[in-house]
Length: 116
Image (cartoon, rainbow, N blue to C red; front, side, top):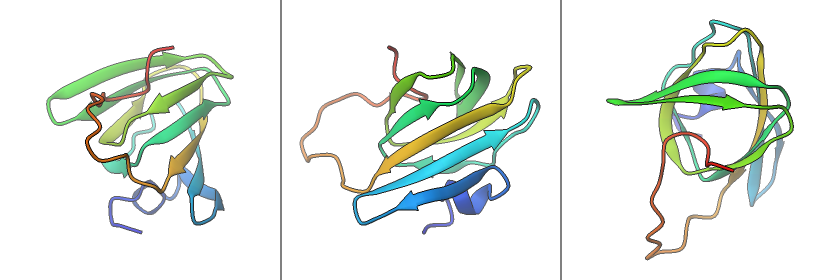
């Protein structure tokens, strides 16, 4: 893994719960006020286990995210740091894809999870 791997950069918040040659599944759990150090996510599917409010930051980009428990969202590959700005724990799972995006893809990448 790289030095920007979330499980290595923020080992108190991320843990690997499953991995094979095609995917890796991370569990993320934090408490109100917790912050992550900058890290990289590959293209992923995010499944929320709790409702939460977070601020994601990358460079001069900043996005505030509110999600309910049980939502499933696409997460473009990205680098960011996060801050739990809500009153609830953040509990979510990331299914990280190990296969790269097809070359020539023109899909615009966004910070934070996709809209429903």
